[in-house]
Amino acid sequence: MPDTTGTAGVQAAASTTDPEEWDDFAAEIADQLQSFLIAVREVARGDEPSSQLPTLLLQVSQLLLAGGRLGAVADFVPDERFEPDPGYDPDLEELRERLAGLLQGIDHYVEVNDPVDPDRGADTFLLSDELASITSDLLHGMAHYRDGRLVEALWWWQFSYLSSWGATASGVLRALHSLIAHTRWDSDRDPEVEAEEELLAEVVSRATGAEG
Image (cartoon, rainbow, N blue to C red):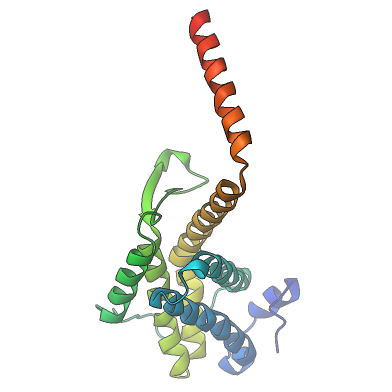
């Protein structure tokens, strides 16, 4: 069984796409992805609003670990090079709407389109849309996995990680990290310190204006 956790795993991956050789690896990846899918649905139910951001931060971090494992191995090659369009999924739309409602006021975030190509600029995204998009990608591969098509599942998860949900999840992770960091910093700040900083800023502003 190939060791997919390091360099040896990458070398072993290059030599085989035999489904029997990937049973354990596929099961581990499926478990990690399923954990994310379950957690996102639980968050969308809104039962524990105080823990929704920490839960999403943890689950997206773990999801990217699974993606990193997929990206580190050689390309999987499925028997058939055709992927049917899964079409409209009302459950995903409901998930997106529930997340949008829970994240109202903090749903928007800004992300660069390509960190190695700054000319592509930056855009505004919605956490609810992106989490639903990630969920859609993962579920498509999960359908292959549950039908016993391990190589097809691994190929789809790897392909969509590199082309879609990897970058999306990375942006979502940064946005969640920023939200939590600001929440902690803003709530822990001493009001007296804030007042002193505001007074100092006002003095500096006046001094700068006088010099001008």
